[in-house]
Length: 203
Image (cartoon, rainbow, N blue to C red; front, side, top):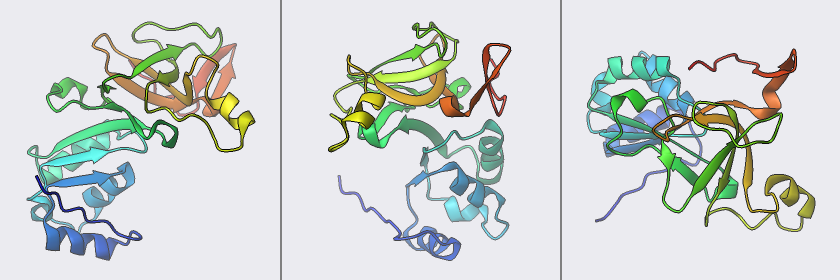
């Protein structure tokens, strides 16, 4: 199988629209702000994405509201999948399966092969079970060895047992699908409890 990859040295609305029109891609790799651009820009019509069958979104959570607006504009034939990764994890660790049920469309997916994860309570440091938020920590062959010539930063990011401390607050459901809900540094303490500044954690 041959793939034709098109990339832009820098983003501009005009160049991006020209590429969509000229190359008629089958797959798009996007961030939520780009999904929002496609959805809200009145100059972009539905037929511009007629060739697109699959969109992979990452870098930040794709909200359910934006996803629904996108599908209303461009149709349900486009499969939108989310994933999760970091530069320190080379980068993918969690990905939405192709055959994921519709009820999981707002998740980042499941762990990729040979990767394990745990959710750690931000106060006690104990591992959490399903549907309980905490810091997402990941271990696998794709995790970096460390930052070059920076042992202090490495020790702050990877613990003695090899767990990558992502700094992201997440939980997983009973089917092992993961949800990102906040950043640890953005949490505030209210009466001894860790509360997200956006207050978007809804079960």
